[in-house]
Image (cartoon, rainbow, N blue to C red; front, top):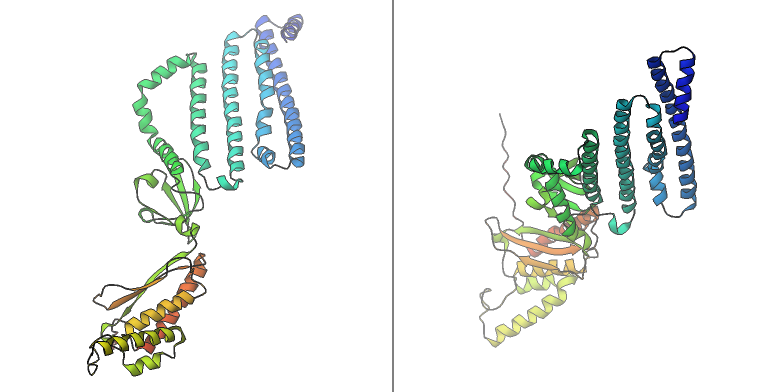
Length: 414
């Protein structure tokens, strides 16, 4: 290359050009020629690599190579050869301008570091996209780890670039950097908190992509769609997006519904309030009438015989209904609801089923159904729960019970 420089310089001198002008013209001519050659080499190498990768990707069964092409890995790698050529040719192009040669070499070296960062970023994005196609890694916070690694890569690139431009050793730069570590920690506080939080979230398996979480402090109630270093994105059920700081997952309280979705059923826990004044003992005639209800006919028959036997053995005076043992309408109704829930096709019979009476309130006696639907999908879950309570509410009058309702007052406004 230097021979070409000398020959061009001598040729310009022979044409009667002054020494200084010949040097500048030689440098400019070689610089333009080198730029054209570099663009040509870059184009050719890029086309070759893209064709090679594309052909290999079309034949391969794995989608990893397709993701490499998608994230422009071959395109970025193709820039390496023109960069090497430029570094080799720079001393010859700026042979008579050593100061300019030093500046251009520094710029090319810094560009080489930037190119290395581009390639690293492309490879990391490829790994991120590939890992998301693996079922067991799909719900992991891969973005957080990629971002953390890229932060360290960018910091290393910045330090090396600064050392090249200032001709300072990396060790000296790191020593000076330690002196301002407090400022660095302050500037990167959120990043550091997010990094620590991402590790804890992953290790403790607190949140995965796809989890349904409720975070009242931030108004989030929906599915986690992204977990990265600084934020967690939640798509609420109204399709809005709520962004939560990653470190908030370990500093504040939130609810993760994964346990419900991974279990065998979704919990139904709802109560109706029975008016206290409607609760009473059942007369033998009323008991006989309720025996026509299939779900509790056997129960009533057995209980009636036990109660009659007990009262007879203990010579109980039944002229007053409250003496001795008796059936109550709320007790029989509770048994009926329990039997109905147990035979309902939408209820998981392998999980807890319970109908219980809660402590009395100022409104009345709460009667709670505690069970699990076999279908956990939201719409189906709501349908099953509504179907159960539709029947329960419609059954109340048969037991001469009443629901508590706030009195409604109508008035005409003149």
